[in-house]
Image (tube, rainbow, N blue to C red; front, side, top):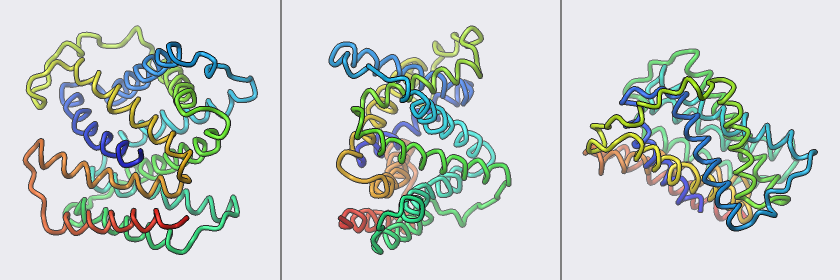
Length: 288
């Protein structure tokens, strides 16, 4: 489930970039993504399991934190980061999230974290640095680095809250309420009446001149609803630390997508880095 989610996110990165290249702002794209995901998930629940939509008042504060600090903020901070930093550097810093999850589990929750988890994290982070070839252009910006760290913290928070809540609520309804609060947040920040609706009818040259609305539909369904649902559902079977490490396959998959879609060649360092990331993931899965 986590591997599939990470792969879908990797493809969605290229899709989203094609949309942004048409002039749609990153914040508007995040708003559409959250709202579309909420509507789609809500429709599924209304057809399949209306009972799961029941929520107690005491659950609302944590669900609001999950949706705003976990779902909305991770997109917001990431967009700020890639505006000020090379995307490879931004991704590498953001993927410190698994380390934050492991540190929280060990020193705050007082859980036993096996030694091989730390080795797996080291392998994965070193591998990512090779995949992204950060030594080529590491022009660091203070605000950009800060945004990356906040994105990593938001991603870690998302995983930890999801791991806690899947014991009380099914994954689809949990994700639905998360996107509900993310949508409410974006609606306050950017009211819908100011949305540039004509932007959706434009064409995206980088995606075979497809209209933007088709790419937005892909982003909502296969870039948001399906992968987020898979990741939350996976927390029924693996703890957040292992799930976070496994999700680190995303930059490797993103490199492969760029090679297939954009014709970008894979260098020896990137292939070696991908091997290290995979080794870290396999090692993490042996830490029962």
